[in-house]
Length: 423
Ligand code: LLP
Image 1 (spheres, helix red, strand yellow):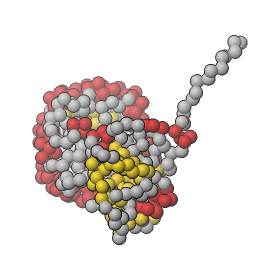
Image 2 (image 1 turned 90 degrees about the vertical axis):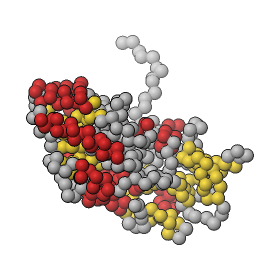
Image 3 (image 1 turned 60 degrees about the vertical axis):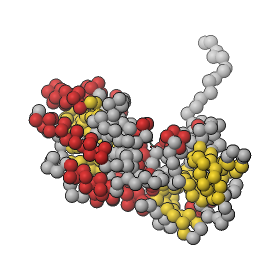
Image 4 (image 1 turned 180 degrees about the vertical axis):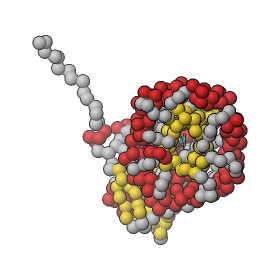
């Protein structure tokens, strides 16, 4: 449930008309609802309140520090995948003891940064990475908490680009190989502490079964490890719970919670979750202005000022995002493609969509854009990245300024053509 909707003919974010935000801040603009963010975070907390758990919000979904601060304020931990995300988490006041570091390609400087900051654990994804963590921790005279990310070979039945738990995936280590790595860590790697098992099978998962299948396999591994004398304290189940973009009916966190609690009864572990999309996805919209409309013999187009550089998901995965008029009109409807100004045919936000017959100067709200929206945006076609706004009740705050033209070339240096004088 979220706090965007019509009051009369006007579309609101909590108590603020979106028309007011676009007038004051321009477009394209991402708008987040702080009440929705908190509600979704709390839904997870409530789902697992009966068992020892830690929610590590997955920063990659939406990494604005105002968003991170909202979660840090609720006691959230964080799932990071880069030194950059660690930097953001620290800026947001995160408790470093609640940070897990995921990702297949952690660089040496990133491992060092995380060790110096004292994060909870590294979710290790290869034998070579494990050796690196051990070596770097030794050099820093630290002991690194580690979990191995296992690849349970479970099909999450989602888009192939966001499936990660199959055998042919670059992620994780196959279970048999993982057992060897744990034993090696215990016997030979003095600077790591194998304290967790980690498993993340994919994203936008709309059924419970793939999670439960993966859980069954990780439980088996956990028991094997314990029989080898390896004390596993944490079971990290990753993220991946889906949301409703269109007609999907994913399980509520409470139902996911019941199934996981049932499946982990008596295991004696602290559960870790790394939700991203299910917390922020429906807590954000992208507001955009209609620049032109074009009616053709085959297709109609609504050309807006947001593009694939602002919201890549439709172009990249063919994803559906609902689109609403910021001011409902009583005119008719048309079927149109909603497209951006970028010079690519793949630059669209919606295809063959039935929409109100909007005019140039009207505004549209692209729904469910809070996850993997701004965080995946780019400057392609040298377009400044959008502003971001947080609404709280009847107020709103700009939490990231729209990029300026000079932001676009920051750090670039023309090569000097002057010949150097010989001394
Ligand atoms: N943990 C790990 C290790 C992950 O790789 C991810 C997402 C998450 C947690 C959070 O998953 P979530 O709860 O958000 O599903 N750009 C794609 C999604 C990519 C997901 C990458 N990993 C999209 O726009 O659909």
